[in-house]
Image (tube, rainbow, N blue to C red; front, side):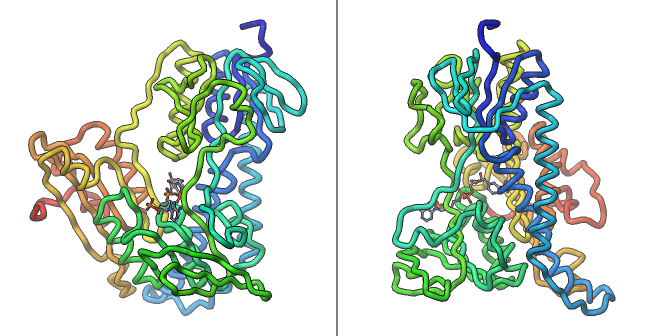
Length: 451
Ligand code: NDP
């Protein structure tokens, strides 16, 4: 290995790449990284972090109203979009610096520039050829927009974080994570918010009760949901506004069309064609359980492999990779029961099997609770919280826990520990609740719903 410049060359410094680089270096490897965009990848720059900040921003409109029921005088919210952007950018800059510091402190050499693979042991960055024993591709994913007339007029989540002014009307296309999150963000900021989804009910893959609860909550808030809706074309008028024509003949006038129709593995222009790395049809790099590609010394992890496109998953994969390759301790990632949250308003939090998945494999009991949270008893808000638990009748093991409600992301993280450790319903029942919280409902649900 001494014959190479580095033991490991990591392409892409997003969540997975940075963690893999610094852990590998901590285990003694000589590591280099390359990146031609931003430090910290999608999550830090145009994903989880700015998105969550926007969610906080948008929720204040509701908080201002609710506060009056608690004795506060009527506030006149004066929302300043440029101020939010500036504050958000300052925080991201700080995080960029932290990520950079993590690499520097770990002794990783960082190259600013696009890295292209030349062959299995060489990469080229800024016209410099560098040799390496192993290569790790951690280039993430990129928003994918289908082809249709007027595609050039739409934006993706990448641009949504940098709009010069806050639009008055937005159409979000797509009914997945980003679609429901941004529809809520815009609505909370006072924007007329529409969401178009091609099927009859969005959030495919989530528990059906979650999908219905979110539909009801978004509708109740005033977000315009268009299901079985297919965009035919988008045209821009001379005043800059957009007209969206749908296949059913209807049209919508709006200022921004945001496409959130999935993210495709980012494998363009990294020289992947120079090595025999095999990809799936959508470009996702095929890897084994050690993240090894079809080329023995080339590895890939995170969104570019299109397994679970989640930051904590990429980080866990990176930890396993570094340990296996450079610590001499083989670690295989367990993809079972990965908890996830969607930061629509109210949040979705979920871990384990949906009722539909569980019924296909087990004889199950389902516990479900719908209620109005304590806070809303004074505000009069009709917001409903939905909590649900799926239990295997034979073993009493809890197979899945799902929630739609305020802070569901925070609550489900704790539930995920219980599910991961194989907790039974009896364990939940024996757990004393924390009163008064919404979370206590998970340990007080006694009567299964009729199957
Ligand atoms: P998703 O895969 O979550 O959702 C894509 C949506 O677009 C689906 O509703 C899908 O419909 C629809 N769609 C796909 N192709 C088309 C098309 N050609 N025409 C019309 N509609 C289409 O992708 P997102 O872009 O929302 O997010 C990407 C990923 O990023 C997520 O899957 C998630 O893993 C990650 N993410 C995680 C977040 C979190 O943890 N909170 C937040 C944001 C993103 P259908 O269901 O019918 O296929």
